[in-house]
Image 1 (cartoon, helix red, strand yellow):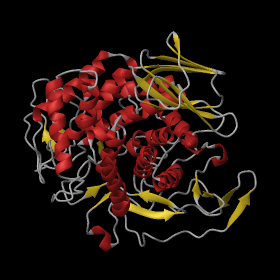
Image 2: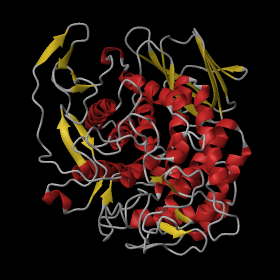
Image 3: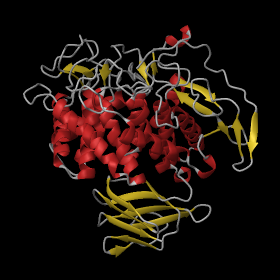
Image 4: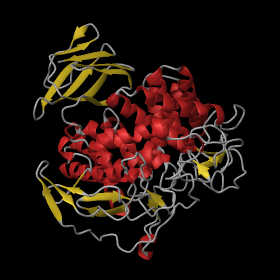
Length: 557
């Protein structure tokens, strides 16, 4: 996205007179965090460091943003008057006043893939059944109106784009005339492919599993070894012929196909041998090239955004943070990458060093993309001097997950402050800005919702002490949660498969944790089936559960 905006100085900090708020022990600044985020006054702690804008004393900042975002998607997005379709089905951007679509191009595969990730995080946290219907409608429209024909070179895979407010997808691929039909972006095949599979795991509807398998089959068929100038798949191709478009041999997020292959390989779905070989080829390319200090492609994180022309010198933060998330979300990162601690740490640092803004009251903001020489011209690429809420929150979530697995206290601090900063992109009416005021077309469904909301739950799953006080929430699960019910004195849920583990923050200390017809025992760790309890102030606690023989869990006070 991304229109580039001139600005004067990266390091300029706001100076604010502040008053003590006795009820919270926090400072309420008299100015905004920065002029591009004018929706809430900055809330600071007693040491002048940034807190969320909504009741930080009760840990309600992230929770408020989640409820605002999902309520907007469920109840406020209007229909297009011409087609009768929800705006998010036909346009990437909505007007802040009319809520109607405004952009020349839509990014459905990316948006819908990230929306599944956000749903898989949000539903266990909230029990919000309506969210399933919203996301299911997105996937169904893509399957019916945005999938390549079965006799194409890339068959039965999602189109990445469509033209302004058109119900049928496949036009307006970047680098080609708008009327050109048939362009795909190969990383989006993986990104929506994993979304299809996860939605199948949540709903049990096999059409989504079959769609995900077809995505994996196409990726496995076309994988190549790659090198410093060629990713394992070309970035943009003609789905009809397989021809590379506009020389786009390099680019995209390789971690998305890796997630898809892993999710299918785990239960042995589809062409296991072909998927495993393709996964090994793609992972080897990552290790040998952008993760390799000795490669000319070291940190060459180029390509992802649908509306950005070919330029392999234009580097972005999405590819490295997705790669870091891929490693951190594996059950055992060392089994995938023995050097994962160093690799993830370097990715975190590279993103902050290359695209970081601030700090704003101790919080780093993250911008989207730029070429190496743009900073010298006082242009920080895309998109604003406030950074982006989605990119900042993803970087924060990755830091939180890194802290969880390594104990890196600075990563925890970075995660907390940047996640706090990201809350300021959300207004109280549910409209969430990509980049702050001053950016033309600031309301993107991707940057404001799909690729934003998920990160708050990811972070709370890694650091449960940040979840709301005095409430019950399932924060993280190793398997997709299919059903959940929150009672006055109980939580019941059902996972897609087992063995599985979950992390919850509860307002009570459980008297009984049942797994199917059996009762789980308290333990010091989860090397065996059972549960652990970590007391928090008051009656709250963190409950971690491992169940090996059943997918049904009941927790009772």
